[in-house]
Length: 377
Image (cartoon, rainbow, N blue to C red):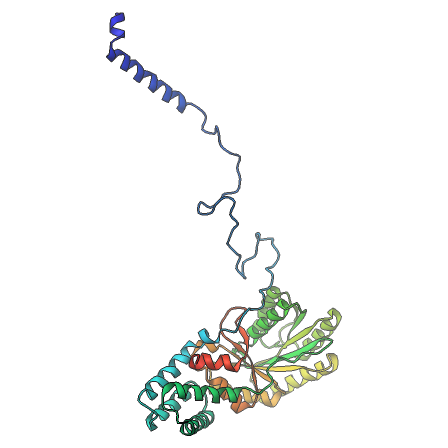
């Protein structure tokens, strides 16, 4: 019997039985053995000690439902994005220029340039004057190709848009007052919100007055912007006299020592007479309570072209407009309306809307605008 147990076969069988027993014993141990204490989960893609590269978006609160509102977005850095936001207009004009002047400076080429400028809403009078001027310069300077025409056209456009005061007026001391007006739907309330965001980000205290009391949504929109940017909102019930809102806002701005008061106004063109009366009352109240108005901005929708200019004339009769805020320039191929607005209304374009983002309200820059319109030289 002993000899059987010491045979190689018997020894192998014994070893196998021992191995099975050890495996079974290991499986009987508790599964929690050796686990670490619960802790925060880490992404497998990120090393344990590497800092997180994820940044919260401007609209997302940090920390959960009870976290305070997000810090206002900082003022945009770098030059305004005219070049990439005027693609539609530039494509239309640049394409027409290349097609028209590819074979020389013919009469047909000049007619094609005129059509392209009209299509971009530069306006009839401004277009004719531009084409006549560029054509005469080309003759005097013996310009012969597309690049030369483009340079001459760019220079003529900059001359028409430059030489005007475009900085928003500010008081050296006390509360600056900006009155904002325009037809409903032009982006008036959004423009006010973006202005407030810029000013708060620059370290200024801002009060916003919801004096468009004929449209409940206007006050609600401003409330959202005020919460988002950190501005102080003054509002009253729908249908309240707009001048009373302006009065209370001026008192609030004074008590807070605010740097800036921005006043929204009615944009409903019910009758010109009523519009003039409402704006006149608001202006008189601000004249008494806030020592005047420093800037009156008229907001125009850049996609409406000549129709927007026609609507604007009613507001020019009702208020002493000092500058234009032109919105939605990125939304159509009608960016040339800036030229028409400047020529026909005789007012400087001070601000332009180049997108829907909070930092897409830019100070108007004639050279950057013309580069965006025609392509850089």
